[in-house]
Length: 120
Ligand SMILES: [Zn+2]
Image 1: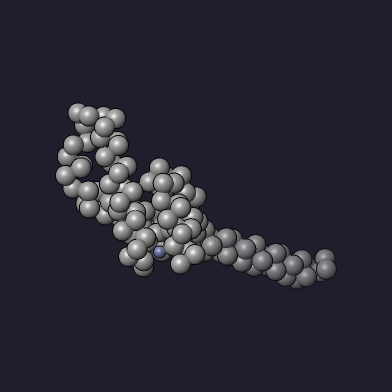
Image 2: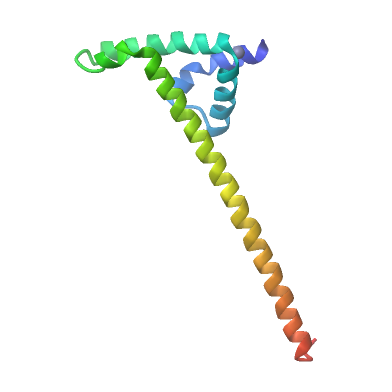
């Protein structure tokens, strides 16, 4: 329950795009598994788009006709962002690990050459 309050407090920041990547991941993971928070997000999102429409009266009318679709799209984009982030974190890990072992192997190889040459 405590986590729900924390997540719901972050809804405005989510909608405004102000969450850090870690916060975003925590937020989305929770929203996907908690109907109560998802409903809360839905309500906030509806209000947010409604206010946005008031600011730009001529535009965004179509968006309001498909609120559920707009929120689903928003959540989909967030999930995509998180998945991409995980991919790049994994990719970076592989590159760093490979680079580390390349350095180790080349140092050992160098030592072997020096030994063979009788320098060490
Ligand atoms: Zn919740």
